[in-house]
Amino acid sequence: MASQVSQFPPLTSDLSLRIVEKTAETVRDRYVFPDDAKAMSDTLLARLRDGAFNGLQTLPDLAREMTAALHSVKADLHLVAMAWLPPDDGTAADGLMDEWTRRLPRHNYGFRKLEVLLGNVGYVNLREFAPAALGGPTAAAAMQLLAHTDALLFDLRDNGGGDDLVYFLMSYLFDRPEHVHTAKFRDHDAQNWTYAYVPGPRFGDRPVYIVNSRSTFSAGEDFSYNLQQLGRATIVGEQTRGGAHPVEFYRFPELFLELMIPNACSENPVSHANWEGAGVTPDIAAPAEEALDVAHEKALERLVAEAADDETRRTREWALDVLRLRKANYAPEPGALAACLGTYGSSVEVTMRGAGLAISWGGRRAHALAPLAEGRFEFDGGTQQVTFTVDGGTAVSLVWRTEDGDEWRMDRRAD
Image (cartoon, rainbow, N blue to C red; front, side, top):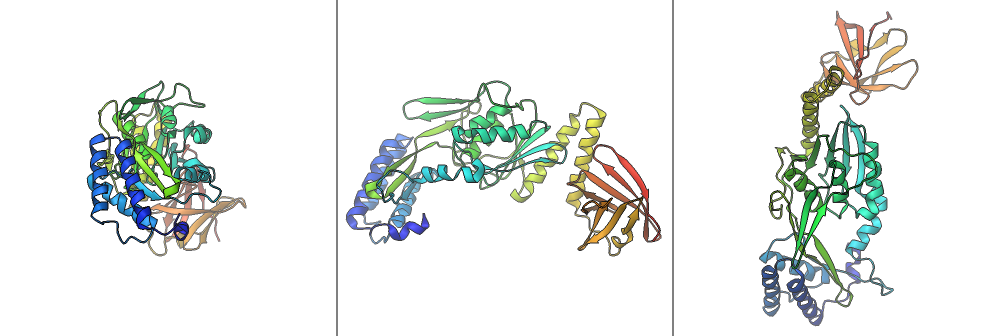
């Protein structure tokens, strides 16, 4: 939109008058809270009479000033006036929502990354919530990919909101339909329930963790707050921004104006409140850059405590041990890496790769070894480890272990 600023017509006093009056009228008639709507409308018109908008040079400048005036009455982050340039062919396309919807496929409908983290924890990095009618198949595929994980971790630290995929995705986390949200309009209420059917697996009995930051907003907060209030998710990270009002868009081509106006407020069926202005309070506070690791560790602690058998407990304890050792940021002493170089068993090679060690066997590609503790290294995403026994300044053997409990001891061959 910034590249279009120069294409807007000049901001004449007549055009400015018409824009402010139309904004005041629309906010008064459409904003969810009638008393606030009237106060906002009156404020806009009063500032217009007082000449507060005189001297502005461009339509985007006027839009910003009107938004600031509206927020002086009620700081609703979902209430925004925007300069909008209609397309040359006279169609009504290419408003803010149209642009966002058109870009969704190349953004993979918000699904930035899927991964099975160490300890069989499913990870979803979700940047936005698409309309369910568009993003539903991608969401279903994502959940199918993570079907066999033991816990789920949703990373919403960069999620700025979106649409009703929120309720579609929530549906995977319950075994039956659940009332999760009510949108309260001026003249009626609309309940949002999880779906009775979703394609693929449900995760109703598996732990759920959500990682938030100060950037998490709107639909991202909807997902977090309602699952938290229903006791279905643990929130880790920072307090979110606090935008709880569903919106409608109003476009006025002749005025080069588009308004985003909250037309409802959110209500959770448990708290009978929402996160507007306050944000979602984390259950476990952590800086955004550390929150993912904190959530992963908390998920593993719970999985260890709930393990049904010794083998499952052991594999989960392995993962938890690796995470805790990583936090210590162990750095080997000078010369400790060189002591490990050599050939072990019949075909395992430990070599230098840059400033660190690498391991390979039987001519296969080498894996970088990351230090965990003295003589102990991890590779393959933490699923495998080697521990060296050093005698007289040189490694004499290594033990190779995997998360599945496999173990091999190999002596170092003489040079």
